Image 1 (cartoon, rainbow, N blue to C red):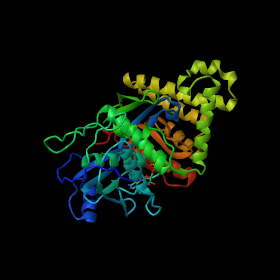
Image 2: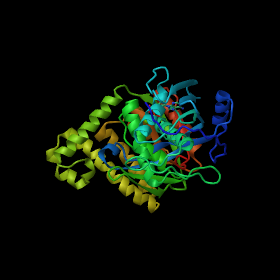
Image 3: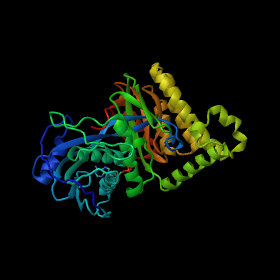
Image 4: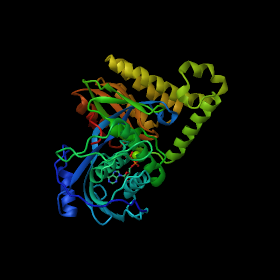
Length: 416
Ligand code: ADP
Ligand code: MG
């Protein structure tokens, strides 16, 4: 692939506000000099709004302090060389001939992104990058989105671009300290779509926009409220007195992709039977009045999505008026609906939510993300998270004989 354009390489060194120590050491160890720039992108947790994204509905998400950091410098020879601390591996390829390499499948994310940026007219050359992550793999905190977003940001720092709906605009100018202005609100949405295209087309995972939007639009101590129809974002305060605890069941069911596709299809069929484009346009009362048009299965699948959309909107009001008891109740209701209507829970997740429900420190808990295994999200009174995690671990081990991994997460700013 030829991205063409000016490949003049400018070298500058500057310190950034992000914590770079570990990633910088990795970079220096691998490439023998200090990196020119760095970027950090957080993982995310779905707070409320389960399987609503592809139904054009509403989601609440949090950017959390588990993140991927990359340190990078430009190269003049059009070669991209990446090292990942997680995989202890190096990937090397020419930006002019990007192809999959089964020995380093994790490099597909950067490759897919460079292809998508190139298609939109971004001109760039080669670069070296070190990748460091604190996002546990397979826990549903979206390491892949953090990898894509952090790649997009280091590439932007090395080869500045600005994004428009139809392509690229004039590149942004550096500030006196060498840094670039932040991406605009509109550019973050365009970049989310570019990341999604990279993951859908090159990596081959058919995911929605939620993960990239959360990583890019996250704000410290704020819940990101996403409207997946209009692709707009709003923020509501995250309650001061609460901590976020993620409990990872360690279960990953086979057939997850098949189940996911079946749910998606069933939601589309239900919307079609109700005469609307997506379940976004169905209110709880519409669903009841249209019930006879649906099979029992379609009704239950739709009831989950319609209920979730409703809970997200009422949940935003509850957070704004600091009614935490009500908000917590929505989380438990969401889980119950996953169990009974959407059938995307499993015994391990159900037990984790049961344990949380009977714990006085927890105000609400539910499965988070796709389901069929993975993690639960728990809102716990501040100062009680550590003891809560211990109680959860002992209850889980007693019931299933397996160790529980859990993390207390801070709600942080989005990628920069
Ligand atoms: P998640 O829910 O964490 O996003 P995915 O399966 O979507 O799970 O993405 C995980 C993949 O992302 C990994 O298999 C790997 O290819 C890539 N990835 C995640 N973290 C890193 C990392 N630190 N270094 C390199 N690749 C990574
Ligand atoms: Mg992912």
